[in-house]
Image (cartoon, rainbow over all chains, first blue to last red; front, side, top):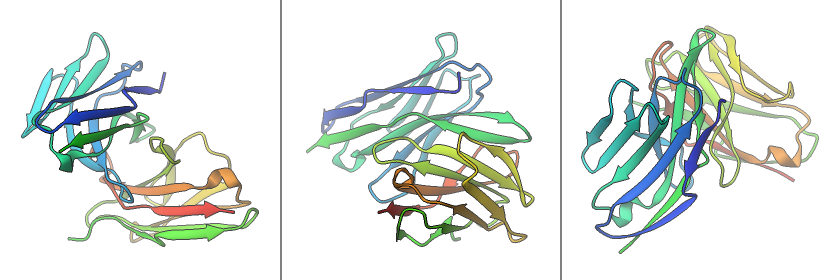
Amino acid sequence: QQQVKQSPQSLIVQKGGISIINCAYENTAFDYFPWYQQFPGKGPALLIAIRPDVSEKKEGRFTISFNKSAKQFSLHIMDSQPGDSATYFCAASMYGEGTYKYIFGTGTRLKVLA
Amino acid sequence: DAGVTQSPTHLIKTRGQQVTLRCSPKSGHDTVSWYQQALGQGPQFIFQYYEEEERQRGNFPDRFSGHQFPNYSSELNVNALLLGDSALYLCASSLQGGYGYTFGSGTRLTVV
C-alpha cells in the first residue's frame, strides 16, 4: 500500500517531442506528489510538485496531470530537449509520526535524441 | 547559500567493516532524511531525524543507525557491512512539517 508504481522504465524521445511518464499509488493518505530529476552522479533535484486538490500544474515545459479518482499522476515534458536526458522519479509523501516521508517510484530513464 | 553537503563522495569498504557517512543540511533546514539508492532503483527511505531524535524508520535492519547533532547535521552509520549495502546514500534536508526535500549529491559506497 506504500508503493508508488512508475512506468515506463525507459523512454526514448526525439528532440521536440513529448515525454510522458506515469505513476500510480494505492494509499489515499498521500497528499503531496513531487517529481525529481536526477543526472548521473548527482542527487535528485525537485522538478515540479502537485497537491491532490489540483488536477494539473504547469511550470514551463513541465506539466503534472493528476487523477485523484484513479490514483494516478503523470509528468509531461513538452518540446523535449537533449538536456532533459536524465532519470525521473515520481514520489508520494504523507504525514505520519510527526513528519513527512517520501516514497519514490523506481525511476524512468529518459533519453532525448538530437 | 549552500545546499545539502555530503561527505565523503566515494568510499570503498570491506565486508564486515563499519562506515560513517556525514550530511550537513541546507541552511535553515532542521530535518534530515537518509535514503539508500541501489543502482537503477529509486531511493529507499532509511530514517529521518528531527530534534536529534529518529522520527520515522524504513524497512532497514538495526545495522543502520544515525545521529543528528545540535547544528542539525547528521551521520549515518552502517555496521557489519554486506555486499548488498553497496549503493548511493542520499541525504535530504527539509523543514519540519514542510514538504520540500533538498537532496545532496550522495555518497557512493562500495563494499568489496
